[in-house]
Image 1 (tube, rainbow, N blue to C red):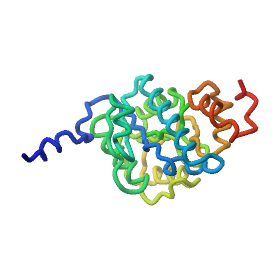
Image 2 (tube, rainbow, N blue to C red):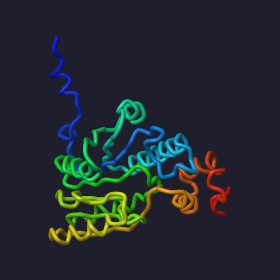
Image 3 (tube, helix red, strand yellow):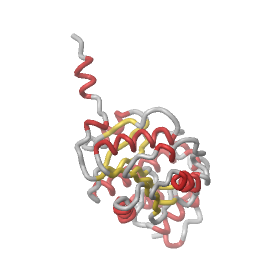
Image 4 (cartoon, rainbow, N blue to C red):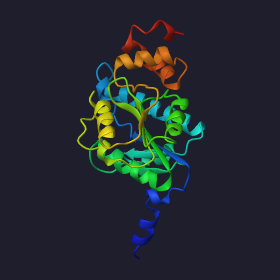
Length: 240
């Protein structure tokens, strides 16, 4: 018996998402050792970095869902992990290409089902809910909104109309990302705005700042309980 039609019907697509006012896409990777948070190794082992990332992923998703956002997981890696850990959330593949191609593809898809869409990563576990709310609110009067990152990129990008020019020929993971995004937006005459900035957990210094900034976050607690010896000396405010 040919089950190809049924298989196609069960494959998730952006068109299967219910319509809503705004969609928040969370970029997520399966927490495989050696594939995530590699800039933290050393001092962390590959497995420690993967376990830390998994904690940050779960905290990010939980906080955004509890806040009431219409979350979609945009996944890279084995969907079995995401199906087991997030069975109630819609999940869609990021697809092929560099980060820009995947972001452009997913934002365009989300905007087919909602008038506003935003993307965040899964390694800024204490990203303020208010910052995401501010970004969606800013889309009432702007086409594109970003939240600057401490490293020169951004931790959030939101659109009301898709602008492919913001995602091509960008040196991702460099300090040029945000300046180029601003320049491209100006060249395309887009109504562009920025909300407050934040940071990802990209290096040991960022982990220490998380401990100071949000000592009660799930990820900060995990760091204190499991990775303190790797990060000594800990910030004074992070020591119970």
